[in-house]
Image 1: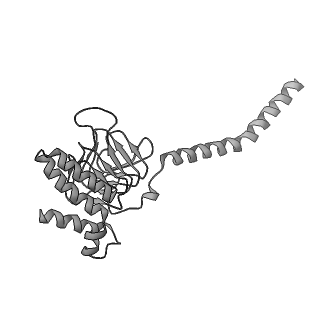
Image 2 (image 1 turned 180 degrees about the vertical axis):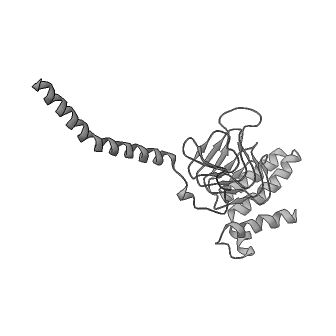
Image 3 (image 1 turned 45 degrees about the horizontal axis):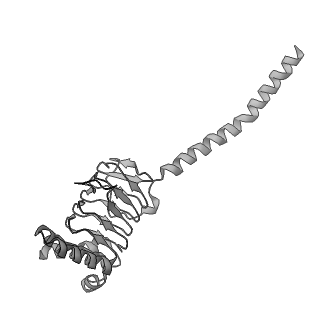
Length: 224
């Protein structure tokens, strides 16, 4: 238990350059408070003390703004940065060394029973406002871009952006979870618009040539 608590502190210093000392992290980091509360609530949940575990999770939600269902399985070194508005569902499974930013939802898609929330494998980064919905797996070393809505499986070593989420990088290079530059993630919609603009410019350049050829053809037709 003490090793797990220590790991929960260590990951903050690995991921957040603003962290200065352990005392500050223990008393002021809502993400750490939420994870620690969840670990206790989850222990009670496994002991079938469902009501008490839900009470603890709701108190944690009130204090931290982060809602983690006590039934969710959370691995080692989960880092929730800022965290306000984060929601993690009951059947969600989160691996080790996962980073989650504020406004992220790991939820279901309806009233289905059984496994209805996503599985997040090791070393995944989920950026601000992303929604991962349904029973699917987000593969190891993947990144989910800010504001994305993911409804399908994501292979390992992938980068996903957009609504609905689309894989834009896969196995090209290993995803670096310490790279938090999510404002510069690829944008497939913008790329498509640029392609269309280039095609329009090309057509504009060819239009005078076409009009000239049509005019010459018309003149020849009248002369004949």
